[in-house]
Image 1 (cartoon, one colour):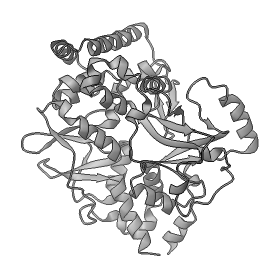
Image 2 (cartoon, rainbow, N blue to C red):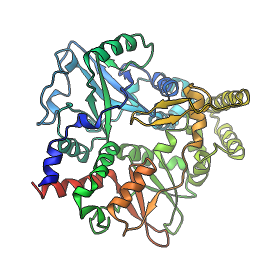
Image 3 (spheres, helix red, strand yellow):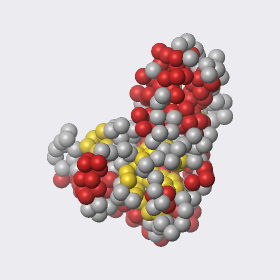
Length: 420
């Protein structure tokens, strides 16, 4: 009973302390606007908002039943609604469509709504006083991000509004209110801090708890990477990844949306022309090898995709020009991500170059565990590598399945319900 009472006492606002405000984009913006916002801000994703003050809040009917109208809500605020989020992977997958490969410039002029997920469950509004149990329920129901109003003191809020209203790009204010993301990772990290209260659950193996999902997204090493575009989009929605396996089903690596999100839009050219194995090398640590860049350019020209080839050359030329002119790196150059962590930027705060240099930050190497690994061990593994999942492999590295944060939360939810 002590565990359940402890949880009932927690509100989602307890997990939002110190989190940065969401940078936002209007639903009327273009994909090109979203791409620019991602590069300039260095954020991994940008929230998209529909602010129509002439109509009621479209999400008002879908609020959690336990959410109580707070002092953050008024008639105007109810009309500002986060309708989704976009990241570099959304842009890349859109550019990979046949019709867009021929004319990427025109594709970027399309409305950002063209790359927004049609699943309304992915982003949900919750009140600061909603319970943590309600937040877990929403995530298990399919939510990726919970949008929570940020509480500020009167004086700090007044000074922040003055400052932020002057911001020329990617506003964080909606009718004077700032919001933040609450993610699956935030809740798992919070549970880890209380892990002793759930004993003996954390010590059980993921296999004994039935947490291993057998249905996984996978592609063979030699298959064309383009054949995995739908799987990459699905992995982005599920917050998982696409496994790359050999002919015997053994795990070699992965094509992860979180790795692709660290690239720029020209990775669409690599996805279109390379095999899955070569794509892993292209997006792996250190940046794309020169020989693969030459292969990509050659194959683009063979397919008469001249505009995509020009886009690739322009981006590489800009990156090379910057790297040759930059001789030092300052450890003070950093930005805050939407999850509240701090990530270094290479040499400049320009998102374009920081994103190109962030190839150094991620690898295509898969994070794996054993079926007999304990729940707490897998939680620690995923949090240490900043991923929402861990691949499960047998001793011979045959792919056995995957364990996700959502699966873990189900185990904790069932444990809590059994104690109520």
